[in-house]
Length: 219
Image (cartoon, rainbow, N blue to C red; front, top):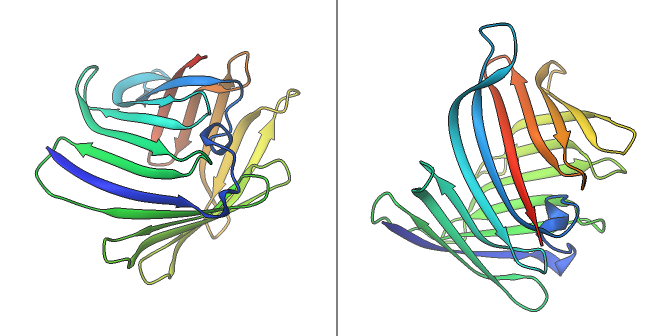
């Protein structure tokens, strides 16, 4: 098995908790997410073969304390455990991967705006050199409208923009992702539970079509 420790920091503690960052409503206890390929041979969009499943477990302060990525219904590929200080900052993140004995340490740093939106994410190697950087922009409702991906040289690789549609409750029901040249990259459709958290997502692009189901449990 593989084990590595990842140190993380959230600068200036501007966010509230993982419920806020993940835009969850209500006191979420756990989220099980299952992804499927789309089977549309009949002309209808249906679930095809299962791609992955994962599970996030939250504490009562709204932070993720355990996270699992599964290769089957009972065998996990990766397990992550997190510990926090009294201010909700991550002080320890342990990752176990069931592959080999390679030891790996990464550090992540995040920046948030005053509304709790993540505006920058940086990953660093064990020697503190930059591995990758992502930056994000949002509209007044907190919806992501731009995502920029940079390489280790801090050079822009991919620039994506987004447009959104909402229902009368303010839930996002459609999202459109565009290439740098303005052409459509993908369309995503959402369905929600009574709390206002999405429980079904259909993502359609020219080369990849997926359905994601989420089972959400509450405190």
